[in-house]
Amino acid sequence: MPHRVLDPRTLGRPMHLLGAFAERFGADVSELLRQGLNRRYAIGLQVDGTGMRQRQHNEDPVRWNVYSCPSGRIGLAVPRALVLKLLLYRYGGGEPAPVEPDAVAVTASEERLSTRLGQQLALALARRIDAGLPPVGVAAEPAAADPAVPFHSESALPTGLWQLNLTLVEADSGQRHELRFSLDDGCMHRLLDRLGRGRTLVREGAAAPALPLSSRLKLRLTARLVQQRLPLGAILDLQPGSVLPIPQPTAVVLVKDSPLFSASVAEHKGRLWLTAFQDL
Image (cartoon, rainbow, N blue to C red):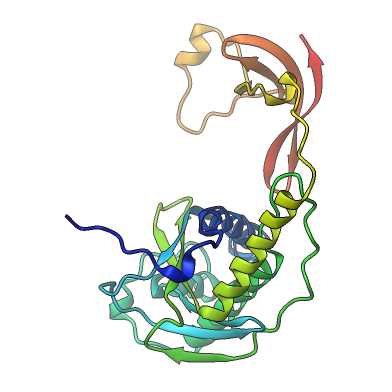
């Protein structure tokens, strides 16, 4: 029966926090996409999954670009399909058609865009490694100055044994792209040191008092944004492209099927938020 062999170098290290770190980095990339590619090209890229694991030896070979940071080196494999799609958005105008990467020769523009995109993502990962993952109840330490990532080289192999995978999905077409980050021993040592430092702060601090029941009890809230009444004839006359006049939305917040609050709907950073709650 196959079994997993423990790496003695990981004993006593906060390996259980790597998943949460990957999710936090996914949130960083989501914000980076919102402010950059999504705003510029309206491509609608979203982070659909994250994970961190040790690299397998039988993985498909990919092209790696290597970037340096104060802690070590970060390898990054960006799918050609994503880079080619961004090129078409930049120079083609409008929404591009799907492209088969194997049928397109590598150009200097593709090389520059791939390098620039890789530098942005590697820089974001270097910042997150330096900031760590502050645990609940501990104030987050401010991130250090932006770590420089000046070095770039092409490499046929990743930089280390640990790999962070991040899946992007296009909101309109549903096409998926997998970004692979490879961390060398220096970056992993820095990351685990930052994660372990946060755990030590909790262990050495005073025991947190028990929270009241109102803070520990979790309820699922459902927001009903629009409720419109129409005559049957108006419903039967609806056609594709018809527009229904809807007043400024006021959401009804329910616990299961019981109305609890009314709230105003506001937009902030591309997301809908509920504010100005009133008891019903």
